[in-house]
Length: 190
Length: 321
Ligand code: SF4
Ligand code: SF4
Image 1 (cartoon, rainbow over the protein chains, first blue to last red):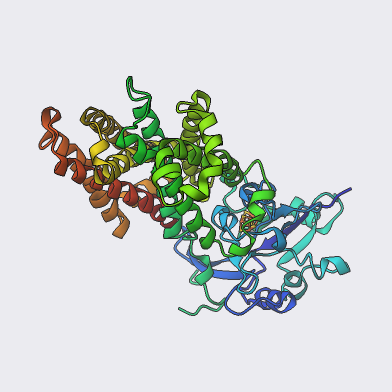
Image 2: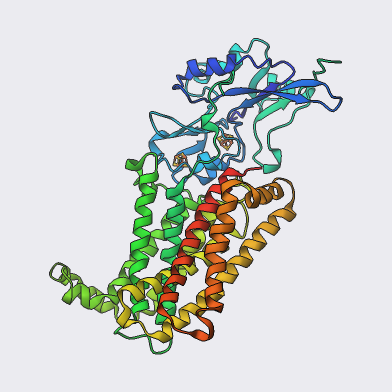
């Protein structure tokens, strides 16, 4: 059976250290000044007046219903059998329709190919070798869990059954495969 | 600011820039000009050569502006040398592919229609008459009023006018684009820009061939389309406001914030809609035929439509809720 890769980003474990960001750049040889992945650290004021942090994983959320693929006129943007959204650079004309249509600002124009590029779950490198994506491997706190959503026994499905999660901009119906565990910690002053 | 996580330059939501707005304008104008030319041609008594200057203006503008627009579009791609892949790889769920296919039909028809209207110039008096001689037979065989060609051209002009709106409205990443009224608004403003361009072009270049009656007819048509645009804009923003959530926030921001609010009130409404209405009820009252004012009227309508395309494109990408 085909796989359906997904990921959990646990805000209670994340410390915003950017190890994932750096690992992604090095594994995928991302050119300077563009990023497949960043973690934005946002101070949040909680209702009881205390302070906490949200760690926003700014990257492709691997939608199930993919606006980027729907709009692409040449099918250069596509979803592979494992549910990973990829770009066939050879077919791309550079209309940037996909960049505009992505509600998550996940795509950037690669400075060399001039085609859009984005997170691929390390499909072209590590996944093929049977390894987890670079970000997951290096995360010092194990805030990232990667796996096959179609496999009931996978680590990710076990975590999903015990942790409360939400997904970004769920109301758009994109059905992201990145799940977020909201932060419960906070209250520096309390 | 240099954050811990690095440069945030790539996260700008403004992805498409002014060449796209100009393309949307030119495509709408082309479609509008084709429709205008056909509307005038279908008026009782206009169906035979010598063609009215307004019919000729529209017939010429339609293919020329669509080609200009397409060139602009191709050079705006980040991989322009690969543009031909758009012509042979299709995704029938993509408005861009559907647009390409519609243009495959529309553009040649627009050229054939123009060839019929400029037959004497092309094959007898013009500088290329020698070169084009071999094609004369084909154009002759089509005749002066090919009913199906004209109807198909009109239908595809409407499709081109509407598709430019769907191209944007298909993206739900931008609340201002993602409204059902946008394609209709673009069709209406495309038509009004086509009418204005035909009047302007006709009176400037084919003046002796323009029948006053036809020009008045078009002025009246424009005077109906322009208030329609106003109504559509009104319904679009009020509709967004009542949808609540992000849509309501974006509607308010787009009408009140920064440079794009100025462009909207000054350019789109002030120049493009209020001025032509004002000219209509003052200088051109009671169907007065004052060429100076008619030309001025055409200019402001055209400028207003450019402003509208720029405004929608930029405000739409700037205010995302
Ligand atoms: S996040 Fe953007 S790039 Fe990734 S699958 Fe969704 S729409 Fe496509
Ligand atoms: S930029 Fe390339 S991948 Fe994106 S929609 Fe256009 S052709 Fe498809």
